[in-house]
Image 1 (cartoon, chains in turn yellow, blue):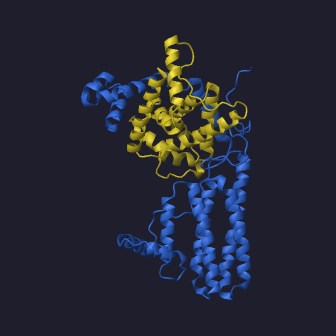
Image 2: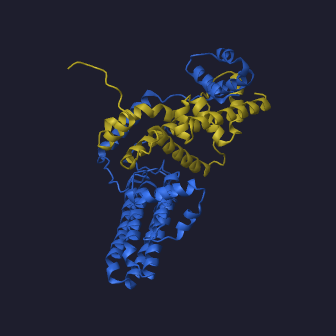
Image 3: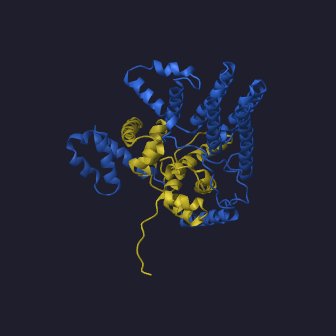
Length: 183
Length: 282
């Protein structure tokens, strides 16, 4: 049997196989989307452990609900993103019962760094925190996670054109906030 | 500023095809507006970019997930009750033409007039066509469920009105519509646990309504009404099955919205189902 490179199966194929009981097919989906989903969650929670637990739960729940998953023309990653968002909302609700503070942007690297770096980090986190949720989300997805515009559009349920406009407005306001705060 | 250019520059910087300065040189007329936005984007990315998952987590989480999936039976396919939303349905072809004609003629009067139409009336197809159009335009499952509940109520109201007007021959169309709406509703409810209470209340209401109508209905209408009643009762059973399944799994299915009053799902997973990442002791 000669080796030849098979094209990667599409999400739809993998979902169909996973629905049929092939755990390995779901494993391929897990490998495909673990990074963006984990990073999206990690950006929104303070601790690595919390991010890991939430991320693992996203995939577990998705697998559990796979038999009811319907392809409605949106990418599978958009579904995972929605599950992650729901879990994050529950996470914040749960946390707010113990801590009155709201959601905070989690820094990419919260250890070390010189004083200037720390000031810049604080400035950008504060400026971002002052933006509307839509603006923050488009900056998180398109700028910080560097997801393609089309992916951001499908995750946010908007057209790519609308995402570009939103991003422009969001960056403009972020820049104004940074100027104002002297970052 | 052209938002396309901003996006293009961002993409090129992110994929290391260009530096910020190279992008600005390429669009000199936009450079003044572009620079601060790209600088702000760079600051956000540099400071907030989260780490990727560790290899240890990647493999241990998958192992737990795979072990868990082997402990339970493979996901079973749910029979599809729903017609394709945009599928061709001959019953609505006339309606589509009438709607298109009404819109082209700039008249929406026909659409309003169809609101009171009953099965057998000339505008009934328009009424049903408008309902399908509303369903197609609904943004999410919760919106679909609300509409389908309205449609199911409407179909029973039509059945009642037809009997009052002495038109039992037209009853079948209303009752078929009721059964279709309930079947679609149950399919959505399986994915939208938040809707289960509302669906259950509606089905209980329908059951009472149908029972009262059957008592007074002429003989020829009774079999259709009885079938609708059975559908409604079966629907109640299905809702309970969905609830039981959710309780057993302790996980909300489908779109995974949290059911009111449910425990926090992160903590709501039973230890036997998923061994969470061990936390260091404080």
